[in-house]
Length: 239
Image: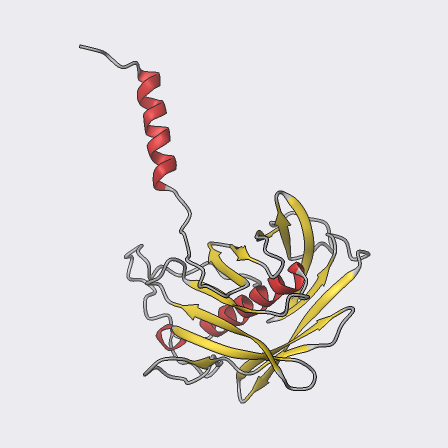
């Protein structure tokens, strides 16, 4: 009879733990050139318009004044710094310093409490979304809006058109909010190929920030249940 050493058991437990703490796999639909999902306090960018992916993560509590709120990295290298200056308001620069070149800005507007976004690239014409309308039957409100009363009201799938300066539709964006999917928040869509990686990432940050604001001003119907399951309160970004 073979006797395993304690070290072997420790290694086996470590291997099993790594197997259990796998990151969720979020499927990407055909034709989509922008896809991202939330994992705790970061956003995993599964696909950018240039075909790459990356991670948007906060710098943490201890960083120098003027540093970005989040950093987009690809293959361990900084691609862009993202400054969240107000809910859904993001400035994008090429690095982690305020002196780095400006890439783009995302500016929010609200139509009767329903958000729509303007993406202003530093070297191109702006793009604007429509409001994010709920798709599928049922649910209220009919758009992603600050009039939601409970966290259940916020759940759903929302879609917005992306239009150029002449009002022509050049893409679309979608947000899926639910505790019963691979990630509580999934973002995807089609963006013009010239949209820079940092600018595309800033759209996800802006939407995540707005959803955080909405949920923080609604009744959390699951608070205090102690279930620890998929209804567990998420970690807000940008607060």
